[in-house]
Length: 357
Ligand code: X2X
Image 1: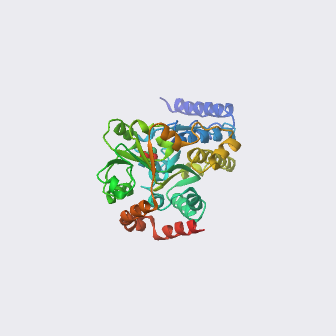
Image 2: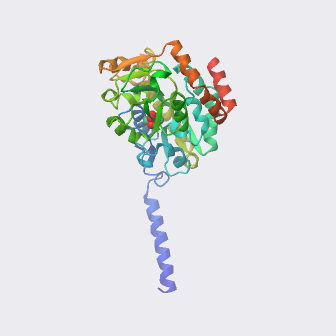
Image 3: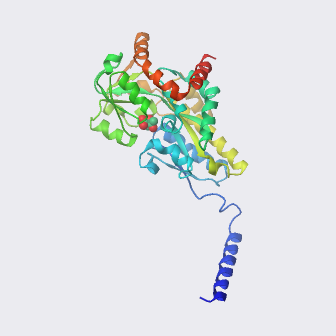
């Protein structure tokens, strides 16, 4: 190719690019065609329904400029649910609607929610999330390149099994239980003398079906869509720890959004989180969440009383006596000795302060 020929080629390419740019609408090119969101569970879970709501609201509030596609079942991570925060902070995945458990490998402070028998009701949880503790946790996220947008929920985790009612630590001894791959779960169930095995959620359902494990622990919003009664006839509602979710975005990309887009996405996150939390709490907080769904979202939930629903499916639902709770607290004391230093003594104190308010 002669020099002139090359020059002409370059000029032509540049000018055709200019023509193309002029032909495009003002915002095209500024935003991606699709923003990918990782979600560990499926679309029929309350958590998954919240993720769908978030993407719908974002579309609506940004006038169609921002399109989020939820990728369910951690499919962007090949099921490796604990990898979500790294991938979002690196910008490989744009955003997440994720459990604090799945975020805890990168932000150990998230384990505050997994201390056994520490936060035991919605009131305490709300005090933490909207108090000093929540503020500290959000600031920790910002330090690792994650921009938190709103607190959402998976819920208080309840234990299910195929053997017998769990009322005292002795009942759980030797039980093979699927737990999530976060190490505090292994420590807690070992302290109770159980035989915990960790596996990703994607593998867990097969393990229930095949009876590889005797039991597992998850909130109502997970127990219902997996039809846990098919595998486990015993559920203990022990609220032994809670699993909030957080809607978050990778900071690198977030900072490039214009302010009006940031505001619209944040509003969408807050609204979707309010809806999703109400789904997860429906029938578990008297009629508070049922009213939110009906009055604010014009939404009639299919299962307004999850406990009764489980009982109707032949599940024996148990609750711990005060002595039972104390026995479990005593049996898991060692978990606090090991995990408070990891979570941070200050954060632990602030959580206690928030709950005392
Ligand atoms: O893996 C689990 O148990 C689940 C679905 O609850 C989480 O993602 C933490």
